[in-house]
Image (tube, rainbow, N blue to C red; front, side, top):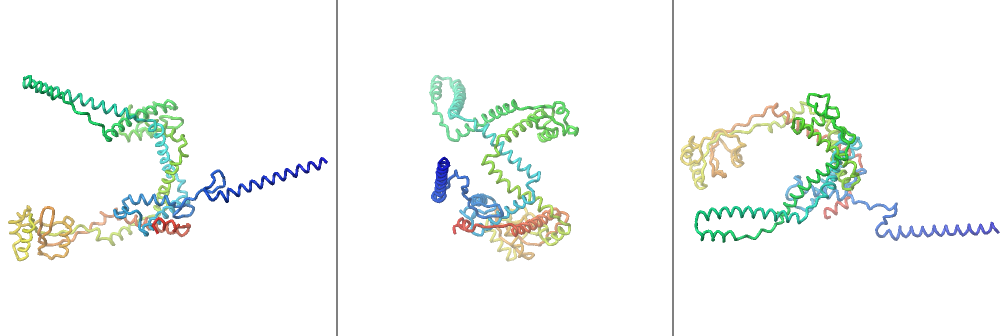
Length: 510
């Protein structure tokens, strides 16, 4: 019987367990299939996160819709686009595709930089650390300084009325002085009474404008900011462990290189070396013992602020993380160009010389023309004289008699002039002219000019040595761009690229 009862209990226990499993399974199915028709339930650990809409996928990286629109918005406002394009709400289809291609190339370069380990290079890490530190310092300043400053409306009102009162008092004193001088001069009671009446007239004080309020508020804010900074800096110094080696500081100079690596101060376990102090001293162009102490005090404060900012946990701030991520890609691209492409560029002397020979016309000095000119102030007169000259009139005579230019004394002869100093209209006419031709009249801000073309000298070629450095840069840039484009082409063949054409079409209004 005992065994039988035990078996019954065991049987009932199994039934309850099976019933619980069925219940939990039913609940699970409800949430997955019924609840799944609405928003996801956040408390389920295996609930998939909402996928971000992407425009393109490059390897494991994506160009999100938001990222793409943000870059387009910046491009609209940049110098890369003309006025017409910047006033449009979207790019033309071909421009969309071209710009997306640029963004894909950027992703490819950033991916390749990581594959090459360039994100582990010391200079890259230093750049990123400095950027992050500056963000941390901005956050620290916002929290400890700016957020703790408040300018009350009453302060602004009181200051404004105080300044009005001072101006009124100054005005009254000036008026009293003027009244007294006037009364003494006229020496009559009537004049005094009249003066008194004038002085009794008072104008209504002007009301404070929004601009005045903003200026006063900013003034108070700046003053309070400096006060709070001093207060906060003092707090940091009191809590810090700072040791200063005054002997090393006093002896420090440019000549004593043995002190460059010595500790001048220790701030919470971090050293400030002699070279750090000397570098800051040279930069500030300050001299003397007091200057050394001021520089060291500033470096100590920098250390304290850096240490505080680095230990506030700001690296977990979502906005800061987003800014660091956004900053990282262009730095990776820069590393890729600098370390994967640039070292392979070698400009040979023959390359420079070949470029000079192939483009020699670009390295010719300005042509010169020999001219005579008659300068006139009236358009009708200019046309009349031009007709006379065409009929055989004497240019020198008419220049002396009619021209308002100083060249009239030489019969209008202005000698040899470089063509780059002449207007476009005159240059075009000269290109088609023969010696002795009369050209014009040409309009200018100073009037009207008639010229006689008397000869042309082609500009001399600029010597190779004078343009070698310039050509070196041009050839190097062309070689760099060629190598970069070739490398990116290879990356496009090896890295999977997927364009979300459906989303791209939506953005283009298709």
